[in-house]
Amino acid sequence: MAKTKKSKAKNPGYQQMDSVFVLKLVLFLILGSQWLYIIQPNGGTQIPIPVGAIVGVLFASHEHFKIDRKIEYALLLLAMFISYWLPMGITIVN
Image (tube, rainbow, N blue to C red):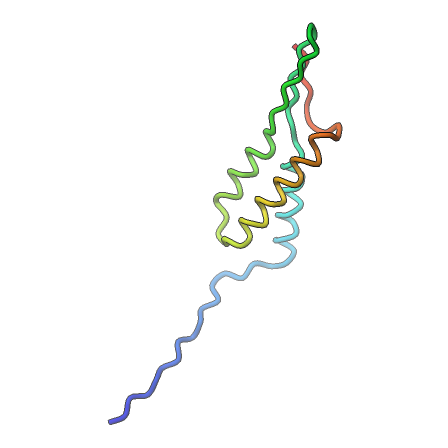
């Protein structure tokens, strides 16, 4: 009796909609651009803290799709570096 090969049907699983992906990219772009600046009034020392990028990395680490996670890390890093020189975020003067 001859054996027949059974083709394994690939289960696509959860398919993410394009609009959800774009919404997540916008979310990570906004999160990556949020900085907390602490400024000392005497010496004018400025301490920048990337709080949005920290929160964004926490969100991206729980991403289901690994390829999306890499894109989100890259977008967070890009937004963080661009927004460092732009007047975005919260400024606290001690």
